[in-house]
Length: 247
Image (cartoon, rainbow, N blue to C red; front, side, top):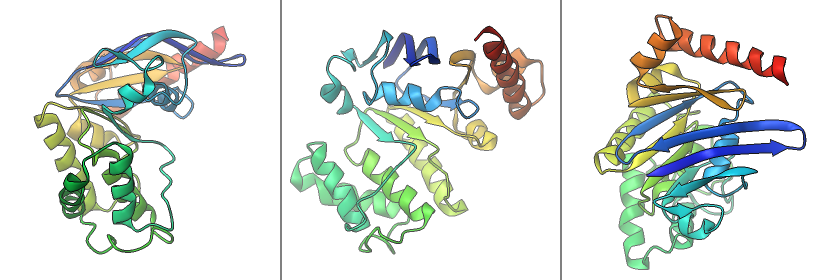
């Protein structure tokens, strides 16, 4: 379980997150929705220890991320918002390198890479250098290296960005398989149909605060609207305006 307890984060006079609390349970897929600047990426960076909170704490399976970041990160697979690759390495070499960084036994690395390359349809790029990859090819490689070490918890920022339909379906199958294996998945997206198809829960963040947390049906009902897209716009816009008014 990932537990976020009263997290606040400020950058100078800007409040990026304000007393955010959230639990992400094993065996569930949670969608994180928010307008640009709402605090989604800041929250994810706090979760994998790239940033430190001003107040509050985050624990991954009981390990405090701020106090023991290296131990916590071993339990996480992370696809950040800026998933740069080593351009002078092939796709396979990028994946293998991250497997070694995560301490995987050398004997286990080839089969783990083979499985992900097959699942994500990367056979045609596995031995190509990453320099010159399309956006979709970069995303597939970055996703594979994020989860090659079989982490207990997966954090994905826009995981289907730039992917074709076939690969997007493969990503969905992969995430459902992770859930079936008892892992937790948190991913952010601006694609409402992806969230509706994948998520057990939806968390909406606006103005640095969580304004909705529940199933798709519960969030839609809370907003008084008839679709998730309309609910998201309603919840985000009102809270963003309130945040500006009180700033």
